[in-house]
Amino acid sequence: MTKKLIIWYFTGTGQCRIISEYIGTMLKSEDLQVKLVNITPLEARNRLQDNIDCDQLILVFPVYASDMPEPLRKFMERLKGGGVPILLIALWGNAHKGNAIYHAWKITSGNGFIVNGAAEIVAEHSYLEPVLPIIGNRPTDAEKQELVEFVRKQFKKNTSIKLTDNKDKLFIKLLCSLPQGFVPKLVANLDFQESKCNGCGICRKMCPTGSINQDFKVDKKTCIMCLSCVTNCSGKARTCNIKEIAKTALGHHKKVKNKDIFYGKGY
Ligand SMILES: Cc1cc2nc3c(=O)[nH]c(=O)nc-3n(C[C@H](O)[C@H](O)[C@H](O)COP(=O)(O)O)c2cc1C
Ligand code: SF4
Ligand code: SF4
Image (cartoon, rainbow, N blue to C red; front, side, top):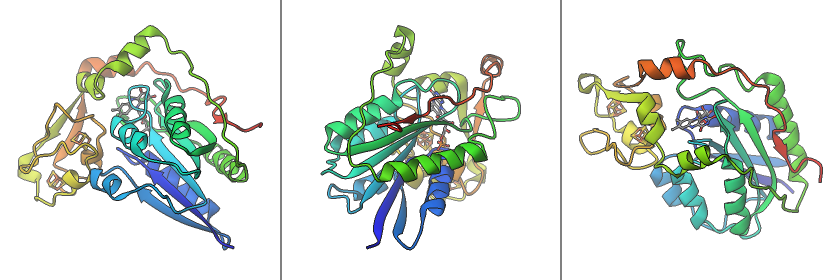
C-alpha cells in the first residue's frame, strides 16, 4: 500500500524550502506519496488541524536566536500528535544552534508525536551577503545525501528518540529569553521603498507573525526579522541592510564542519 509522507517547512529566506524539496524529490516513489506544505504564513498554520493524515511527518525549520522560530513553537505547542511519527530537522546558520532541536523534541514528544529522528544541519545564513561571509554553499551535496539516507532509515522506526538539554551557557539562555528579533534588529535594518511597491500583498500573506499592516508598513514590535517579506517581495521594494558594525563582528565567523548532526541514528 502507498504510504503518505508530509513535509512541513517554515522558512524566512528559502533554505528550509530548498532542503524540503530535495528530501521530497529524493524520497518520492510508487510506494511513497509526498506532500510539501509551507507553514510559514500565519493563515497556513491556522488551516492545519490535529488528526494529521499521514504515515510520517517531517518538520523542517530554521534556528532563530538559538531556538525554534517563536510562531512555529507556539503552533507546535497547540498541536496534538495522536501517535504520528515525526522527524525534526533544524537548519542553522553556523552562528549557534542552541537548544532548538531539543525544544522541538520536548514539545512534540510531549504532545503525542513519536519523534523517530532529529537532525541539525548547517545552511546558508539568512543575513548572508558578499560582505558578510558567515556561511555559504551549505549543506554540501554529500551532506544532503547523508540527510536523505538518515531520513529513509529512521522512517522504519516506530519508537521515540530521547534528546537531552545541551545546557547552554547563561549568556545564550539570556539571549533566548529576549523577544525574537531583538538581536537581529540590532544587526540589521528592514527597509521599505514605497515607490517600488505594487500593492500585490504577497509580503503580508507570507509574514509568519501578521506584522505587515494594511499600508504595507512593518510593525516593528511583533516582527521577528525572519526576512520572509524581503524574500517574497514581487517589486523588490523590501531589503535587509546589515549595519556596518555588525559586518565586522559577524564577518569573523569561520566555516565549521557539521559534526554529530543526527540524533536517534543508532537505537
Ligand atoms: C531572525 C533570525 C535569527 C537567527 N538566529 C540564528 C542563530 O541563533 N544561530 C544560527 O546559527 N543561525 C541563526 N539564523 C540563521 C538561520 O537559522 C539560517 O540561515 C537558516 O538556514 C535560515 O533558514 P531559512 O532560509 O529557511 O529561513 C537566524 C536567522 C534569522 C532570520
Ligand atoms: S515583517 Fe518581520 S516577521 Fe513579517 S515577514 Fe517581514 S521580517 Fe518576517
Ligand atoms: S510584496 Fe513587495 S510589492 Fe508586494 S505589497 Fe509587499 S512590499 Fe509591495
